[in-house]
Length: 417
Image 1 (tube, rainbow, N blue to C red):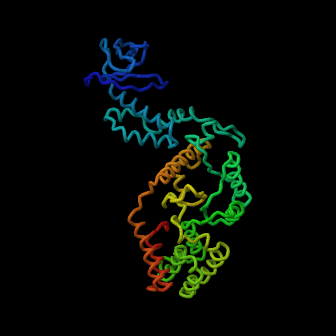
Image 2 (image 1 turned 120 degrees about the vertical axis):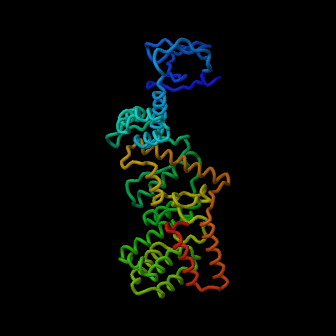
């Protein structure tokens, strides 16, 4: 096939097949078992093209009575690409249009003829509305089958709760138990990772008493810094090295062997400035009494955070459930939704895509394909191991051990290992 007989295909606004050949656009007039007959899009033009059933060129007949309009073909291709994305994505319509306009590399003439994003928005919004169910006006509405399942119909639970009480969490966990039982299966997670919400901790302890419940290191550090701010120590944290060291050292306690924590807290309190007294009073009540170290100490874990948007995947993810009520996942999901107030259908579609991304990660883990570890992460792991060995061999004191671990917190502004 020569350059003059190169064919390409597209569709009309109504989804009808269209043929592009030598700068002209043809519509399908009729087809037989062996031949397809294409006629020029212009009704007053007699030019036509024949292709076989496999859309291969046979011949062209007649002369066009008008000049070719390659710009129209460029714009048609742009419109087709944008329309396809609008139908299959939840990205905002103006953003899709602007991205494809930049990507299409239009000729100067086609760029001038192309509609501006606000002008194209109304037509493209109509395209999206045509494939989306009406937005419900009450809490009582039917959910179409497509929105009742994941993209490949595998079971997945993403729960939108109406509150944060223990009873609500117990109801959710009971549902997680009920459906496996209905299918003659057991739901007995060996590990549960969550934030430090007391109502959630109580619910998990009641429903899964033998599971190992771990808190998220990211949330632990964030909670400590929020308390620094509440106590009016934020300025001192920035300006005073001793205050900063005390705060970072308490964050580093989660990396310390759990049997050393009580002694370590006393050492840090004795070594701190008087201005830190209320902070350590809070720490002992909240993180030694109310939430015992077994929930937030991560020294023996391969994973230290459930902040998936910034952290690493759990090596034992297939044996865990992770309660995603943390900042990192929320930020990631907000970027996926890309809209302040999405309607219910857009939210469902984003949840389906989130499940697909999670399932891909889980599949890689099950196949032994772990996420690549960057140099910083390797360095941190080496640092923890080295400090631990030096303390075990009595080469450094416990306070020096803690201060060494606090440098890991200082190195990582996101406080995620």
